[in-house]
Image 1 (tube, rainbow, N blue to C red):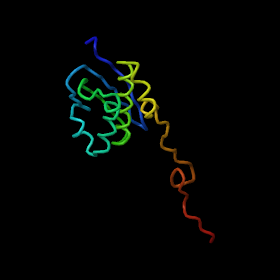
Image 2 (image 1 turned 135 degrees about the vertical axis):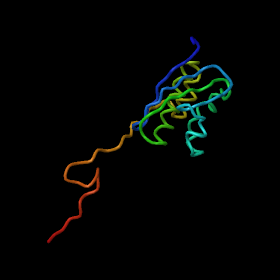
Image 3 (image 1 turned 90 degrees about the vertical axis):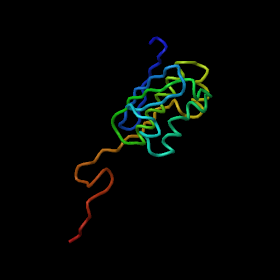
Image 4 (image 1 turned 120 degrees about the horizontal axis):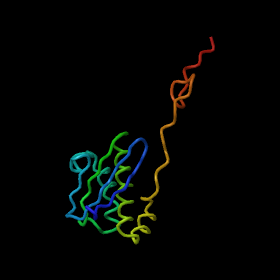
Length: 129
């Protein structure tokens, strides 16, 4: 499979390994169809956005393996992986994907819980007496 393009996408705690294979537009995530794996319509639309911007909708099959995090983080990781793989396919896709912000790794992470507090920001209730 020399014509297989691989890329990695990350978001929050999720890591997605994406393989693009020339095909008919068959897209699977962890062995399931994208619409089945991501129940929210907005998540599916976000994952497929790189294909819309580059007009490569049914030219590639996507096989993604994703683990860690939740639905939103996994969808973002798969989207970044697809965008990176498309740039490897054709460098001319870089400009529209970059302008749409799809090649930038979202650096936001969960803030750690601090000692002596209830959570990252929330404090225990203060009692004067």
